[in-house]
Length: 371
Image 1 (cartoon, rainbow, N blue to C red):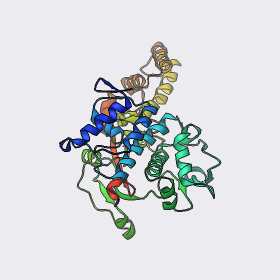
Image 2 (image 1 turned 60 degrees about the horizontal axis):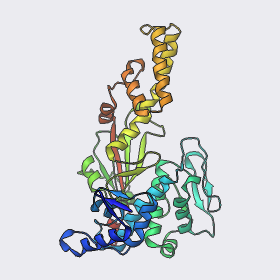
Image 3 (image 1 turned 90 degrees about the vertical axis):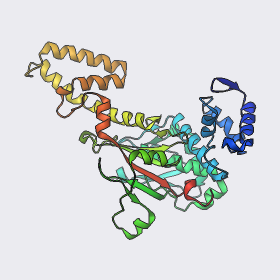
Image 4 (image 1 turned 90 degrees about the horizontal axis):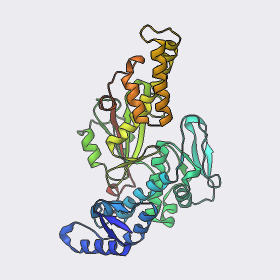
């Protein structure tokens, strides 16, 4: 059963409702036969409650796709593939962690930051990327490789095995960026907070010239980026520099949310907060040092009793596992750190978190001749 705007539907009833809406030209709804197969996939993914019929259509990859079968299939599969990979609970591949992956399909090339996976000879690229989506719990993925896996999995499911295996080059590689078949059509980027956005295209890549300034802002880019775009948020805090959470690569879903690993599916604002939390919590290490000094009577303004009381409160928060409450406590005691200057997380996010990149791939329906 599905629930839409508080009303209960069977799958057949919901499909009939969508057909009826599509029959009204003024509704803007376009019917795709693919809805019949996609609706059970939504249910299997645990998505059975929707705020509106438009939300159902967006979840199916429809509504905004016109009459293009590829556009419908690709957008729907971006949503379904992202959710399927996340539901499998892959391990987050942070710095120093060895890669885990399907050994029958892939072999690792290179080491450290240069490591990537290459498909073994005789294996099907389609089978390999769809197996990743189906069995992601056996994998380690960082945020960048998660986006690549979603893109390849969605593209493969949208065009089918024969066309996908025929289209992609060999050797077939899965990388953090630039996996086989994933090239940019447009890439907006800025190199620092407050800088102007510039636009990189295949044409600017060929001439190796400075990319032109783009007349866009953060909100315009977020609104206009089509589903499937890679959207990267950045933390400008110097403490985040070089860490696993200096930036978070995400993939935009049809409903305007963003999927990432390990943060899940969030709005742009919530994604910034999740990214900010990772670095704010690292300031806790500085507070630990301060409290140890104070407990030993070596701090000029914190008494040993105050230090022990604060440590008890901190231990209680750590045991509770509420990261947001812990971050608030750290900010309340920011004077016990050297560089944390903000009163609360919202102020920190507003000042330090920004949209760093938006990349539209050549497989996106808006850039292909299949739309």
